[in-house]
Length: 252
Length: 218
Image: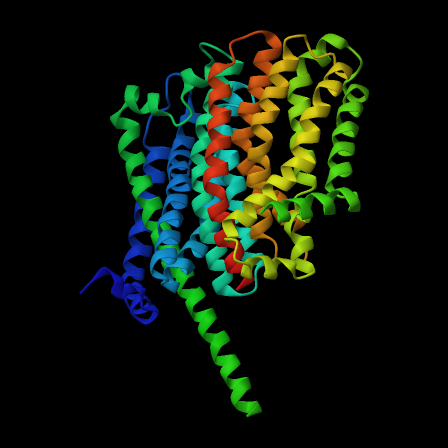
């Protein structure tokens, strides 16, 4: 029994269908627990007030936005190397979720930044690299949509994902460098630490435990969504194949 | 290889394609900037490196969709793909031709336009050096984007969307070299990064472009 058996669409569908109810329920329970716990049962931060609570959406979404791209990179590699269609479809299914996560991270960040930094947007390295990531997601999805032949589309997007990953990492460092060039030394951005790492370290357990619950909930939700969307893609492709066959048989 | 390069150059020159278009666009952008931000020469001198880099980048972007699409339409791309020359070399030559007809004129025109924008004295050298190092990367990355979208009817918009994030690092380091040069700071670090990006792009991206073209020609 090898991992690659799941590359068979039928096997993939039956297995994921069994796992699905468990995933939905667990992620739902974890998210509700984490968010309710975070929003109502943790004290306000002494410095940030109640705005600190946006961390429960912002941090998991930001983590997912990066990791989803990484997952797409892995599945794209699998598609290029082993030509398993499920892999390419999973990458396709993950991209819109990734873009939503990126938007959540950017929007919640802006909402938090307005009272904290006094601005909705700042050309801070992290914010900027997320904007670049957002553009990468958009380009990736647009390329999928633009090409009719599914295999061609899978090949092209896979290569774009590989090249894009290299440039995404490069942009991250470039942007870091560029901002240092602009304001040297201390700035509120660096002191505030966008991911809230300093909150985690200073205030630790009170905020940290519900945050972890939220992160796990987000991960499970993502897995469930990817399984669901990949299943939909597989079925859509089957319907297309059936329709084509019907038409051919009807004509002949 | 040389025959292909000469053919592309001749086509570009005689059809008056990318050659004039990119330069004209560059000229328009830099000439219009003082009208839109006002004639304070101190301010203009400060933003000149960034404006010149941005203008060069957009001018490059403008001519990308003709890079492979023309050959695709008249079928010569299929012939080139079946020719004994590896597709990787073909793509590299295409990028080189694009650079010679678009990038190099931009590099040569940049100092002249720098005068219009009141670029500070030491900036000229670094502006030319950074453009000379950076524009090849722009051409090679653009060729990759053009190869991705070559089969599409209206690939222009998609091409810009795909290439835009890929251009970010080059633009950052290139403009940084020019800016630091103009302000008299040390430029070694961004200069090395820019050269690194260019060298790596030129060495590696033709393989990706060729792979993409093979898929598209399948």
